[in-house]
Image (cartoon, rainbow, N blue to C red; front, side, top):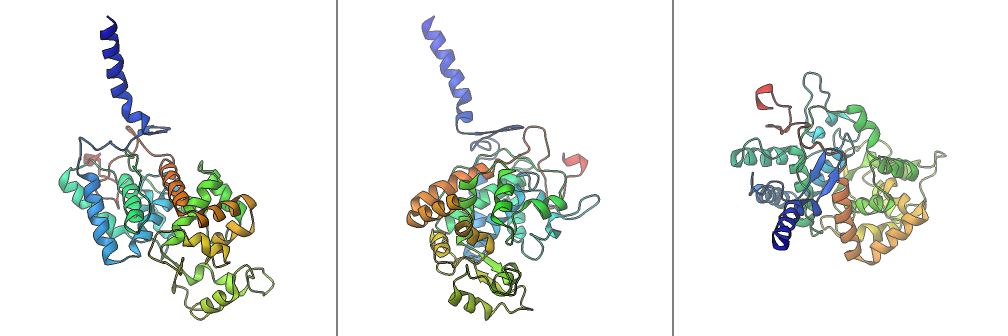
Length: 335
């Protein structure tokens, strides 16, 4: 009898095993092995396409990482950012944070197309984005992590959510922290995830006010190291050149490392939303110092915070759908 009880308990533990490594969400569980049977090559396919895209253009890694972030902060991680305008849907691509800057959609289309051939109507666009963000981090030298999977895709978008919920380059520290807290993220997540600015670019229009009139009294921002500011002004004039691109981390712009935090301590954070991490809050400044001193600690926390961010209000179970085309909702016969 004791043996049979032990056997039953063992079976129960095995059945619950995936839950031990998963994230509880309002709609169910996400766990890394979600596609183990239904599409065993899913992660391999995502990785292959991302590798090719990043090898072709290093900047693409930051673009794919940013898309996941901008998606999760609006209605949760549901691939709503990928929807084009159609019918009653007004695309989030038209919002201020995304217009003229969100990119990488063609890479996600290529991944989706390959996955539809391998295992039709199985892998969600939302999960593709989460995996592509992880792979982009790894391919630029950053940490890896097991991505909890099982998200489904939304059947709608929110232009107003995209305009209001995504932290902006000119937001105050408190506004940015509040936007994170509303999504269940804390100050540690804020500082660690800001570290993604160790790769990628930003446009002149996103930081011009720091060079010429940040304080509102006609004076430049003296929180920005002045020789660095002078260098930026050569390609970011008072007017014009809005789309000119600048490295977020000018030391190692295509390598995922902790130089971003070292730059902040030297007053060389490109965006106001970067520099406020050391000028407006003691707790965030302490975290910046820790990550600047310890790359391993930054990597460890970044991975944890990415998993946490990827679990913002996902659609699971019977909610949402698995889109056949990431840019549009399914017709009824594909639901």
